[in-house]
Image (cartoon, rainbow over all chains, first blue to last red; front, top):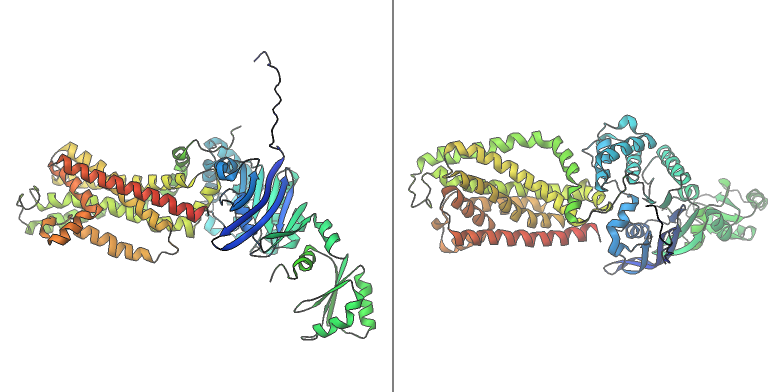
Length: 322
Length: 267
């Protein structure tokens, strides 16, 4: 076109950088309410986490966000669209890495990626090119011809992540991305996800591992029993809800309760777990020294920094993994 | 650069599944190819030729067939369409939901539940076409088809017979929590249907109430329709009733399948 018409300014209420907007979102299954009114906003380029124990409503939330589970109440917008009416259009632009593998184990690694790319309406040639790139990215090029059946758990996870990237999604949803993997395999997955984050892909993940969320997420919500109990950055939440350090004291079986009453004035807060005491304090070493001064001899002591696990314990009175 | 898109409609979505089914079938076709050729041949030889030798072919008693083989050939054909549909919409459907969870991957993409079902049914129809096509070719040299057109139409009708079984059984399978009911479906559903729906003997031989029961089954409608075509004894109004019955059953099964699978995958 040689001529340009007058510029028309379109005023839109849709914010182009709003990836997820949830307000008062609920999900019920019969009489059981899995998600009981949550408000969440995720913006482009964020790495956002849902941290909570099993049964907190994280997966139900993720399925609603993935536009495969209708909301029972409240407002949900994904990329500015309503999943109730625009499910296919939303799903064309997001990537989903489900908690349980949904790979076809009777097909090869390459075939799994290829057929998935075809679901998104991509031409065969384009899919083949992307498959090669993605195999490289998740370090599975050498396994391209292997049957999925024969892959390790970590490789299957990486393949699922590669598959979720085939449509170059604007948002990548990861439901418990490293649950069930051994520590080494987890680190490989984290490394790949970190690279995606650096490339500017919006990540949304659920986890019940506080270290996973601490490593990957710039912002998170803590969920418990279907509601959000806190929101912030990992460091912000720790600063707000916990002390700088924690002294862990382990006494002989059955003596933890009795010991707790003797040290409770030495810390801001004392938590009694079945196997140990947690003393929340600014200076852990100092606190341990004071404990010894009182003639108490714990079987083992450990001084560490506060983590999101401590935040969760503070907010709910329970541990994340039990 | 090509962009990922939502399909224009459910059928366009189902077309995106073509490569999935093609790649899967390329891996498994050898396992089913031999049985789908040998099976009909054995039936024709054992039941039609060998057993048929003992049965005098009075056309009056055999609904117009000049031999027992010509009588049971259309019954075996419709039975083949039914058995193929049963086989492809029971364990395979459960596998896609529960064991491999492949359907969950499909519906995480822009594809709808309807597209997923259409794609699977498309593959079932491909299998029905293949097994029934082989059957027709195997039987043709035995002179069981009165006319060429009758043979072609009898073949085409098997897609309708297959679909009338495929959609309701698919729907049934889509809602099951585990596979144990399938054994009953085969033993108390498929096999009695095959034996008593007029494939092997004229249903006039049954008691009155059993005759009514047989006439209520979808396979009898399929068998009778197929037989009219192979024996060139088409009765227009009866044929229309058969087609209508099968179309309605397929349509109801489709609606039930969409309902059951949506509830399973998208709840």
